[in-house]
Image (cartoon, rainbow, N blue to C red; front, side, top):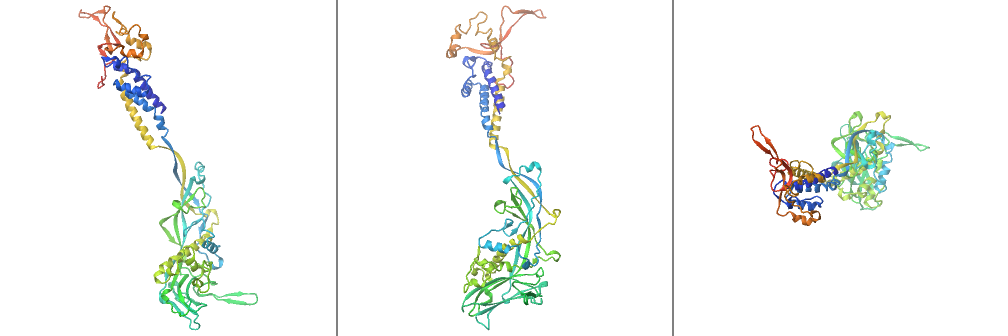
Length: 589
């Protein structure tokens, strides 16, 4: 910008210096527009005013271009700005820290890795879900063995970078359906009116028709006999139960002095038999009101759900901020994003069944009650799971879960609480470490680096382009209008050169004529000089200087001609030729 501004200032100086000569070249110019005119040494606005007043367009244009050049530095100072939100991406791969194993054999005997205890604490506000659990999705744990090219690795510091990987997450899914009301019975016990008997027959189909002790029934038979201390008490009943297929195997337990046989039950816990075969429903949920005094509560007011436990594998785009590949971002715009069309239910090996037989009643059926009242309170006849549905965080009142009209509400509430626990169970039990690093699977993703770069400011660039274009146009027109080469044969910058343009002119006296410049001109002030040459018209060009000393030339024809002498300079009147050279075509006079 400095060079450009300097170049235009140089052009302005040249055009301004030539301005009086350019005007005199027009011929018959008053002194005010010719020998008395100058703009050098004037403040730019004043110089522009004088040029416009004397109609010297070349100096006006060059002065304007030079003035605009003075603001280029100011504009260029805002030309570059720092863009701090530049994202650079590169493809990367990272090994997983484990594989998924959804079998969880003998789940009621091997434990759940503390998931039930953690879940109970969360329900009471004493803990939060783990860092690798997003909603119901359990994210895989990534290895820290990420290799980055050396020239890029230096920029991977703090939150200036993040990773986005496509990972396979697991999500629990409890598929429930309500059984028909004709399979539900509620009646008063005939032997003792203080008891109400409940019976639920959960249907079994296909290879799952193995209900009962000997595995011969086409249903699960679940029955309860409910006792209340006060006759006439209206109570609520609700439980989550494991459902066991037969045939059952008893277990012998020794207390030190004798052996005791413990029978496997058709429902509930503890269960000492083997796991159910896969592909069969394994969880039941019952809920409804009853009245002990008359035992006539309608079966339609009870809802019994038969549920199958499934595990869905879902593809997610997960972002990890900074260089912490073990802490995904689970909230906000950088939270995980499900990739539609890339999900499926896991199966149990070669058998191809999607339902698993996890026994969860031991862990979530015995949750600590949120409402710890007993006796005639309705909550006294519900287990910890149903109590947490009603009284836990985001609880749903009993009245909104009761009856056929509210079956969907009950299913949603059961699924929500089950999924919350099962996410913790998957997080604690389904991660299977690789035996060797070579077995590790890789996930692909993108490394995004937030960096800074210089960026051209569009507004400043546009203004700069416009100003440069205007300056170029003005400078070109000024140079063309001034016609420096056509006005003078040499630079008028030296004193000797200027004296040569005035020699033999009437200004200095020629051919015996008196000089127009008074003898005491050296003492004349500038204000007096303005009026000194009023009434005279001056021109610049070639003048005839024929005198008695001219040389006679004899032509071939015998005619004798006098060779006329010419001089170039400034004088009074009109010369034989204006300017040093004739004007170019289309150039204004």
